[in-house]
Length: 130
Image 1 (cartoon, rainbow, N blue to C red):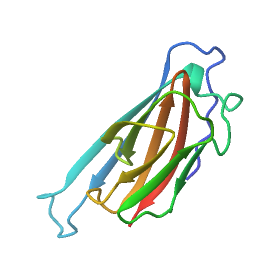
Image 2 (image 1 turned 45 degrees about the horizontal axis):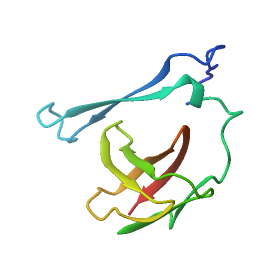
Image 3 (image 1 turned 135 degrees about the vertical axis):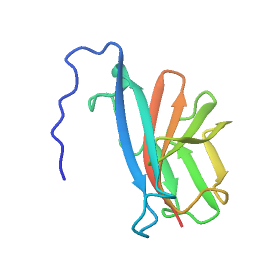
Image 4 (image 1 turned 120 degrees about the vertical axis):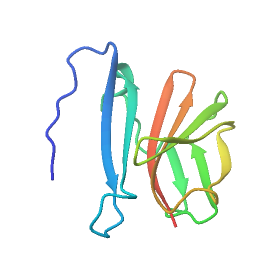
């Protein structure tokens, strides 16, 4: 599946990404089936490709087992780290320095997005948990 999308012409307001998943039990009934939904809201000023800086947020190892190492390219203010699962649920938030070891042992196996906010700058990176 592919989706063609064009960002708004102006950098005002926010952009919302919606996701809906259905976890099923495969027993032929609907008992135990569970819909999951999530919303990720990104300020429009931070959503453009032109203001993104590749490799400004480094996360490793990827996939991670118990610990994810995070490193911001530029030294600066303390960063706020937020981690979302693929259903859009915020699963972790913490304040950190530009380099940190993040305990991900309590997260379920799967794919996640980590957002580091440092002052007015935001950096986004995907990672997998095994």
